[in-house]
Amino acid sequence: MTDPATLLSQVQTRIAHAARIAGRQAEEVTLVAVSKTHPAEAIAPLIAAGQRVFGENRVQEAQAKWPALIAAHPGVELHLVGQLQSNKADEAVALFDCIHSLDRPSLVAALARAMDKAARRVPCFVQVNIGAEEQKGGCALAELPALLAEARAAELPVIGLMCVPPLGIEPAPFFALLDKLAADHGLAGRSMGMSDDFETAIQLGATHVRVGSALFGARG
Ligand SMILES: *Cc1c(COP(=O)(O)O)cnc(C)c1O
Image (cartoon, rainbow, N blue to C red; front, side, top):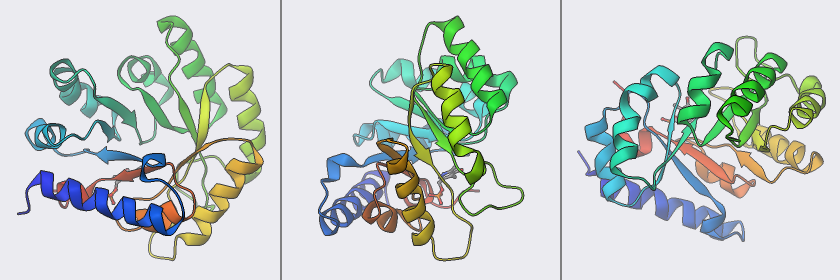
């Protein structure tokens, strides 16, 4: 197995290369290392190699793994990349530094309440169901303007849009669409691109790529 520091530097090199081709700076792209299903022992070497931003997709799993890691490495940032249940909003606001999955009015309300209660504003991406898929998270394209308006009215710090394109087909058109939607709504952030397609996403404007298996190996 390739060691974590080598995998990290390979991904960083690919990010830099994709950015250069697009006439962008590598520093414009935040690498979110998605550590879901991987234990603390697999995460620590990446922190040691310099990685600072991590992603998890479940609140409970993150609560079990991350408080100790964050205490030991205070500079580390934790992002929630998976769907969030409204009844976990308090826990999410306490633990995460960024939420990529704001996707419905009830969650706007729950997060606004949780952030008020905690006196802590956590930056959010609004997740868009970019391929209009039946059982996929994310708000419908037609509902995006209203959801953004609600989030703004609730004073949620929305910093961008996020998507997970449909599996198994060319993702570029979906990334291009998310980029356009973000521009139309005056949002700077674009959370798009995973292990198989982050270079394409960077060429189409990604500011945050969420990379798991290319850093950690396949999930068990
Ligand atoms: C798991 C996950 C990722 C990372 O996927 P890889 O293909 O392993 O890079 C990115 N985004 C979300 C929302 C995920 O759940």
